Structure formats: structure tokens, C-alpha cells
Image (cartoon, rainbow, N blue to C red; front, side):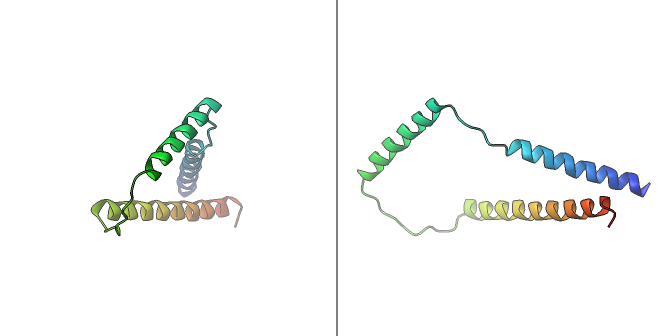
Length: 95
């Protein structure tokens, strides 16, 4: 019974890993898209350089706090996944 549960957990982790790898797979845009983006970026840069810029210190806002919290949660989840994967692969290696 315990072995079945471990196999299911390992399969779940492996399926999650496959899903994450699929989502993170690099995608190469067509050359026309790259040219259009380059042109848009250059035009935006020209416009911004022609304007006066006033920089004020950034104040922490609710969005900033949420962004930090989400980033931390993702980092922790990644670490937990790596530890779990290491433990599961250690068990399957006979350790």
C-alpha cells in the first residue's frame, strides 16, 4: 500500500515536471515579428528620449508587496519541488 502511494506521488511529480518543461519551452518568433518589435521599441525609445523625465523614488505599494509575495511563493514552491524530486529519485535509486 505504501509503495503504491510513493509511485503515485513520484508519477505526479514527474507529470508536473513534464508540464512545467512544456510550458517553459522556448519559442522562436518569426523574423517579421522580431522586426516589428524592434521597430516599435526603437520608436518608443525615440519618443521617450525626446521627453523630459522626472524620476521620483518608488514608494512601496500594495502591488509591489503582492509582487514580492508571489515571487517568494514561486521560489519556495520551486525549492520544495526540487527537494521532493530529489527524495523521490533517491528512493527509486535504492538509497
